[in-house]
Image: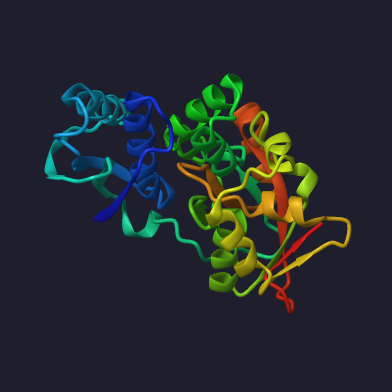
Length: 283
């Protein structure tokens, strides 16, 4: 039996999209463990006297539609009157014990595959400041709303050694957990990381989430950045994600086959190496 819970405040302006993103994010941990979701409960905070009830209806509809896409019912939940809207799910799932994926077990020589582009932290901050382009908003909403179900389904038959989903601690924070738990180190190629449209330009203009800055300060304790990577690129590699993709460690042959099946939505971004004085090297 698997169980996870996640909820957060709105990161986009459109209530229905917020509901979809929050639900997809809540389901992600189940997929990252190789599990099958069974059912979910809503968690809701809403300022019932300050915002129209229609806003809450749209948020819940977005979550319900995303749960339906995942093939599960939302069987209930709990709500409170709150000054700031909050939404998420408690998700129950299942997996055979011998098939469970953990954020350990990565092997030296494995390739590292990331299944979604980075940059949702930058774009969410730009939305709050009113400077995000419509293209950036639409693409970010689309990517954050994508279930990791398809990414999991296409791993069937491949030798998966370690998996995590990439969320608030960013790529480097979640990769550190894989490395420490597997007693290995890793190398990441910055130029192989895909970013959402407009992210680099927004970051260059000073748009950056506070969580991303905290992630980088933490990452400097265990990451060796190549000298050509300036502070901006270091921040971008640390961007705090919402409903991010899966980070998968698997043999290179399987990784290449997987990326081919996934198409442009996933990339090989690095590899697992022998344990060193650092957990991660970013080139």
